[in-house]
Length: 178
Image (tube, rainbow, N blue to C red; front, side, top):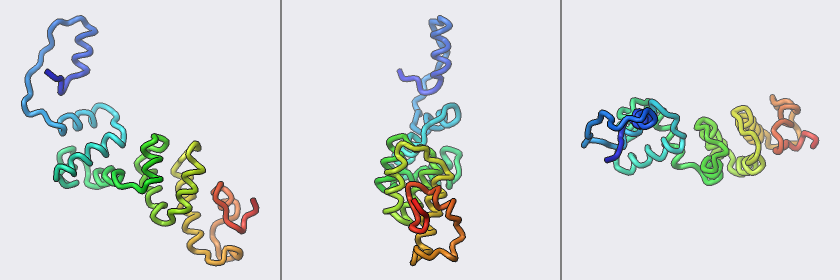
């Protein structure tokens, strides 16, 4: 038999030296049962959740159905499902474990869609660094800044200060000395 529910009870019984453990046979066990229990009691990784959602989508379930089964909102399911279709540089960062925060991954995905080249450069230069929401927001500000400045030598209308732009290291605006 396989223990579907009650792993903690089983381990506690073994430690307590019990020879028998009250149990029942569950012939209706499903992946949903396991994921629901683990979501409630343990910290599943974003990747484990996304993989589960991906398996359910592959079986033909909608994100709405998955959300109802897990008692989660549609936006929660959607956010995790997006991890399944990341661009390669963002996916590599996520799968390496160097960035597992789902919101940061979503922001990096958005940055990649805005400017793939700058985002790839930023990821390469931050693989060993501390990837925070503030730094990713700075990346997105830099991308927006680049799109709004056709002639980057003259930044008279820029609302970003040179000090802020300088913090975007290793990305630099041409008007800021290195």
